[in-house]
Length: 434
Image (spheres, rainbow, N blue to C red):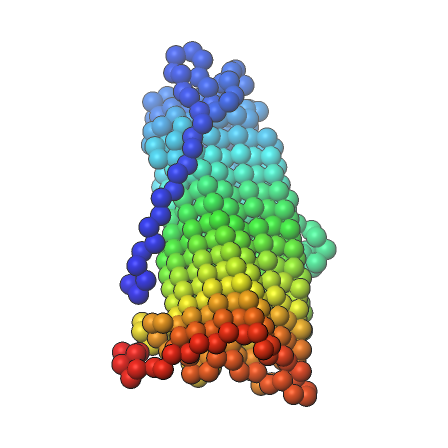
């Protein structure tokens, strides 16, 4: 493994006390006659999905599930509002799906809370599937997904997804937080799409990527994402006023964070999505680019720490009025040390690369260092007349680069290379990239 395993210590506070005899407490709530308490002894002869579905049909709304192993042979169907399902602990309240064609929990109603469960859907379905619902939370669960399906899905259905996001026809206020999610799915293991004011935060996600699609005023923040077979986070436009902040992404097989059009046939290259903030993320060992961004306007990539991407640290195209600032980018073009996993022409690899149709953007106050391997450029704006009125100012570029800064500044480009960039290149020994 080219980058050492990031050592993580996740601490989750479980603020509830169980008193078995007579008067149990669930977090700060008293369990009274409105709660249904389920334990593995009383329900040992019944599949949990059948038991819960029957109780929901009877009008029960609050369920506390004691530690134990509960087998399912079908879906837990939450089709009524105001349902709460909470386990005693995410380690020992185990829901095991035995039917490969079924999901574990299916949500299609509003104001639902699911927490403190260990959900194992490795048999083949989706662990938690939430469609067309608002004010739903999935918190503090351990979730095991199938290798051929999503682990978690939050989505609003529709016949024209692009029209829905343009018209703000989205689900609202859904939350996925403080979960441990394990999946070997090569696609969108955590699928968070068509959300308004949604939050996916403080999760540990191993073996798959986060799909953050077609949303508004939502955020994916402070997650740890490791060993994805594709991207760490894939963000699809059209989308508006979203944040990707404070995530740690390690050893993704493609770009750590990728921004792309959801439908290239329906969304032209001159489309621009407004106000995406990609800030303060740590991206280590991405096997393509650290961050690749396209089709943005008035958006920013600020304060990110990118280490050892195979090719470019930050790569942008089809964008206007970007702020690329205060990023720390080290050891771009790392394929020279670790080998190529994916194909890419390395001739113009850079700490920051502006490729095509990027205008009125500022590349300012970045620190770009290569001390492990060489890289052709520190900052490069490709000499295409579609790249105009961009500014390269106040950057620090040091180490093993063939060229510090490359950009056309004359007409018709009108890019600016400021005199305040600090450049300190080191002669490259012949043995450097071996």
